[in-house]
Image (cartoon, rainbow, N blue to C red; front, side):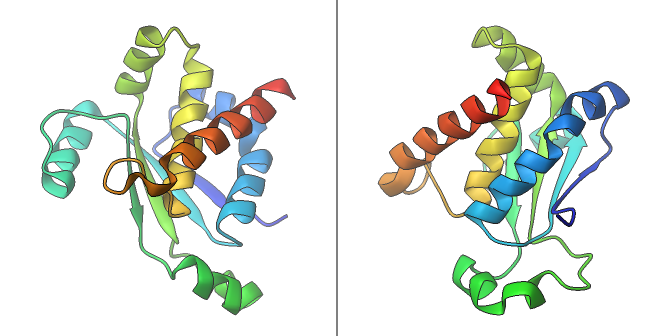
Length: 156
């Protein structure tokens, strides 16, 4: 399988956590969106707080922000293999703040690894068109899928 997922500015200790999951995360991307390239970029608290203010009008940092640039899900399906050929431009990007992920792991009584995977899967589902904030129509389905994918990832 071609690489559908790339990480940038990732600390070495986090790369070690994520590496074993790349193939399974790519399978989730392919199943939910199609053969598209996804980037995850790790940023500090100040950067994510700025982005949260600039793009969402919300004050303070958050764990992840998701941006979708590519074609709609239907267009990707219609293009098939051509949607992925020779592209270096991502279909979508997720910006992750590890300090907030660590804080949330403690708050929700999760391991750092589980919380990090939760954030990545959550962002992938947003990239696939699921929403829970602005339109709750598919929120329940989104969280059910998130839990199902996390169980699969963590049980293997």
